[in-house]
Length: 175
Image 1 (cartoon, helix red, strand yellow):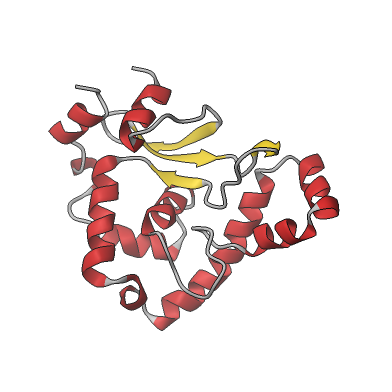
Image 2 (tube, rainbow, N blue to C red; image 1 turned 45 degrees about the vertical axis):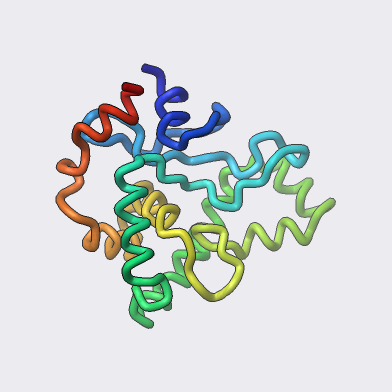
């Protein structure tokens, strides 16, 4: 089965082909993808969160963490300070995904959008708080030195290679 169809099954919707697979599970299915922030230039959608977790089981496990622990209480003050530095890295990485000519066009024609993209966090955050651990975990899969992602990994049940199973074959395999 091709990746585009698998990701469509995982996300339960049609997907654009403008993505790159960040990581695969032990069964070979996509775990996370990297979207282009402006896949159709300024005429199309803007993805302020280019890092997407696609694995249904991981999304379910991470949603459970968010629900049970609450994002505001989940991470220490020290971890939130560390996140501020990675927020800058995420903004730089997001902008690196935009062709330089288009980035310059945004800077000249839509400076508010440009500065907003330069300030957004891993999950597109504009404020001080955190949101969407799914995006943070996908960012971690691309950048394993991300401390917040490392902490999420420690909180997830089981070992990464053990998380795939019959559930994945049903959903990702299209059965």
